[in-house]
Image (cartoon, rainbow, N blue to C red; front, side, top):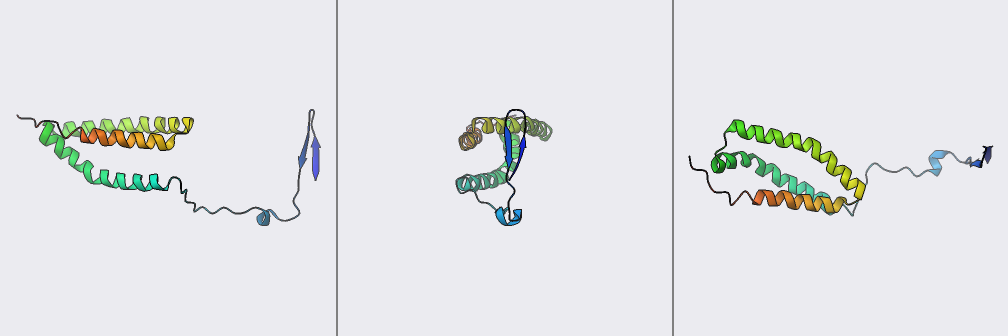
Length: 126
């Protein structure tokens, strides 16, 4: 044991007899968080479903709303720029309040609700 004195208190350092490799348990990089596993599976399946439906949003906007390809490109570009700013903000809020599961559920429900609200939009007649 080695010690070092400072002005107010004494720091104590313990020097192990064995090498540090044997005393420390090496953690594997492979770790499964079982509490978050169902959310991760849902996130994977949800994004897979979105990947198959998002290309049809352009067709939907052209047929139902009468938007041109250029205007739909502008809308999707604006959406991506909004994602650049909102995702870090939502991540900060989730970390600050420690409510990751709640925020994932709320955002998933909001996103689903917005897609379902597009269904009753009447067809645009030219």
